[in-house]
Length: 297
Image 1 (cartoon, rainbow, N blue to C red):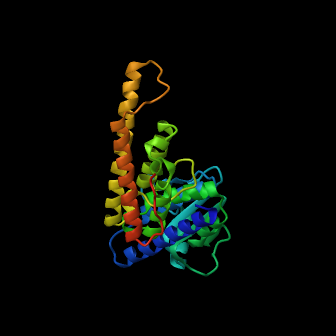
Image 2 (cartoon, helix red, strand yellow):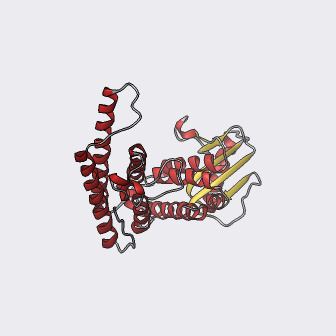
Image 3 (cartoon, rainbow, N blue to C red):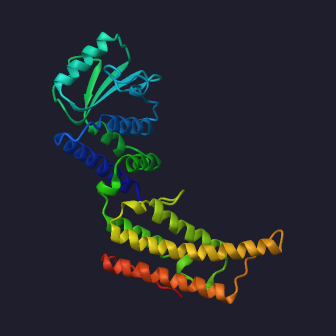
């Protein structure tokens, strides 16, 4: 994905989380304050290269503040609603406990007052405080941001990213020589296995380590798509299993095998699995209206 796509995904996920928490609070299902604190802490540590800690994990119901970066001298109160009543109460507790940090930020995750802060030390912000930092971040930082949001948000229920968009990315990874080329065309079986393992990785995790590819993880898709991808992954595993057996046999015959030799039965089995993978992927693409056809030959 490009930098702009990473920004779009991060903003979509964060604002979706905001709406989810707002609805959760309205329905009085429970208290999500700790979850919000965790998300804000982890995001700021990445976006600002900071070292915030959640002081509530050190002292339960810590007065006035939730997050603290001792090195920068910045304290943050994280709340769903930074109303003027909440702001005044926070400042009262801040003064009562003789806190004297360089800066106090009161962050209203759902909403905030538009009134000016009654204290020049305190800055009242909303979720835009995080969104603005996301918009100006580089690609590597954005990847970390999306990893945090993907970990913290219950995306198997709430993922705002379209299934077809992510599925199209996965199908594009499947449509590679590791699947397309029959064994008669394979130059190096170990390279084939590397490619197949990357397909398994993107199916399971939604990304490939060290590459700018990002989609949903397997558990986040709708059940019908998940089942089809699991079948594809199973066939890929069978090919890798055939290779590993041949590799182990070669090791037993030589202390330093440099070439893996597959017999005709093994090659035919691999070719059959490749045809099966392509057929499953093509049918899935057709069912979801995605223009992609994998041709094996």
